[in-house]
Length: 308
Ligand SMILES: CCCCC/C=C/C(=O)SCCNC(=O)CCNC(=O)[C@H](O)C(C)(C)COP(=O)(O)OP(=O)(O)OC[C@H]1O[C@@H](n2cnc3c(N)ncnc32)[C@H](O)[C@@H]1OP(=O)(O)O
Ligand SMILES: NC(=O)C1=CN([C@@H]2O[C@H](COP(=O)(O)OP(=O)(O)OC[C@H]3O[C@@H](n4cnc5c(N)ncnc54)[C@H](OP(=O)(O)O)[C@@H]3O)[C@@H](O)[C@H]2O)C=CC1
View 1 (spheres, rainbow, N blue to C red):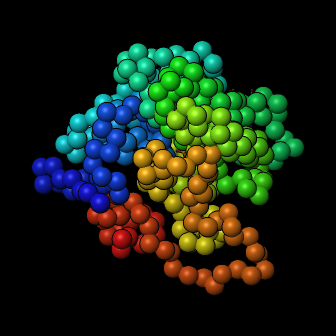
View 2: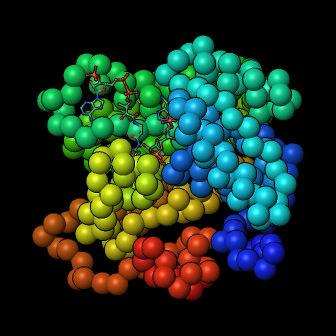
View 3: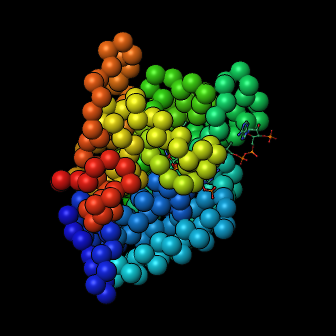
């Protein structure tokens, strides 16, 4: 673990990975201005990576980029953050995102297909337009980004891709569109891991539980406490942090994962393995958590302070 201080102020900046791990690397993080994507972007920058964040909304991108740049400067770190507006559902915009990145930075080492989402609805009530919007965002968008990253750069130079799945392992009531799309992402990840191994391109995924709070994610459902409701079904008795997703992503991008491809890592506190309604665990305290903030604050937002 490393910590940084600037002007005597604790910066809540850390990573379990060594400083400079991603020096001279270039990454695209879709949805990199908010929530989980912002956490991934910060950790990559902190580790020396040049990062391009891409999503639909210009205001979100500029607000997020400003926050991240201020944070980086305050940490005394130097790294490059670039912004590109891109709807992953639009093939021409995806092609342009990849070519812009390669033209500007001369390469593309990492692609993190984080951008995505859905709305809550019983499947019987989903209109075709809504179904298509969610499948195109999460599955087709991931396919387009992977294909363009591969064809425009990684095929000849290698690289690493991390896709975003979810806790859809047993189906996903009220998110049938997204559950189906993410199951497709998991399967696509396996296929590409095999097809592109010969090009030295590794393709993996992470599957967070329904439990990673961020203001933007909660706002999407119009309910700030919706993630807390998941705790009862999580053996670790707490929600997760964006850092707990980011560190798994950084591991999958790192040389430490050089022999891992086609894999999906669950980041869900055991939630997806825990469905035994008649034999519930006795009530217990939250487990220790990992977040950069929790190493400095006694009053961490969720769970208990890390002893790690
Ligand atoms: C229960 C806790 C959840 C725990 C797990 C959490 C997992 C997470 O993923 S958190 C991340 C949350 N963030 C997001 O989901 C952000 C991205 N999501 C979206 O932008 C939308 O949900 C989208 C994927 C549907 C895209 O929206 P938009 O760009 O507006 O798409 P279109 O205009 O092309 O089509 C919209 C179409 O979709 C239907 N629809 C959209 N929202 C709803 C809704 N709330 N209820 C019902 N239907 C909805 C609808 O058919 C829309 O078309 P129109 O009828 O013409 O409006
Ligand atoms: N939070 C959780 O518990 C879980 C989250 N996930 C997934 O993790 C990812 C990040 O979610 P989270 O950070 O929690 O929530 P956020 O709502 O903060 O993040 C979603 C991001 O995706 C971007 N995005 C959405 N649609 C598009 C699109 N068509 N093209 C480009 N970018 C797009 C959004 O930016 P913009 O609006 O500017 O386009 C936004 O930055 C999502 O794929 C989500 O579904 C999976 C499992 C659980």
